[in-house]
Image (cartoon, rainbow, N blue to C red; front, side):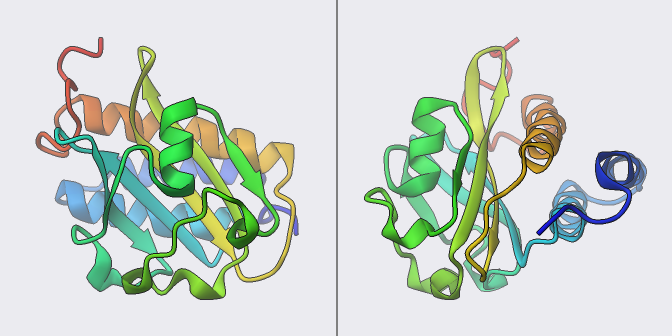
Length: 176
């Protein structure tokens, strides 16, 4: 399934608009995951932030259970999200549930999703979190979609590192 009409240019414009809105950091992040999901044509888009205790916390989602935001945490070496955080490399799977690192979290409601794409949130070589998209169908994400997600991850990394998300990433001030 291809990216939405307008592709990366439209995504960047919508991200720029979301970043400029005079709203709280949480509202901004909530808006960004909606923009990403719409552009990549994904049922789910989620942001996990690495916390000081070396856990990854679900900080925003479009498509998973919103009640799981700020409640779902996993070790930084757990699940597909942890694998991405550890390797600092994108991971694209047409059937995520068959991957040996898959970790089911019932509170998120993700059992219906198969295709998975995740990219690390990096700044100065440090992993600050992970950005993911998911689809119910079995699909392969295009190189263009992967690159668009990686570019978007840079914006999210700067939000975290700048302190806009108020201490949600360890060493955010020393990552520069």
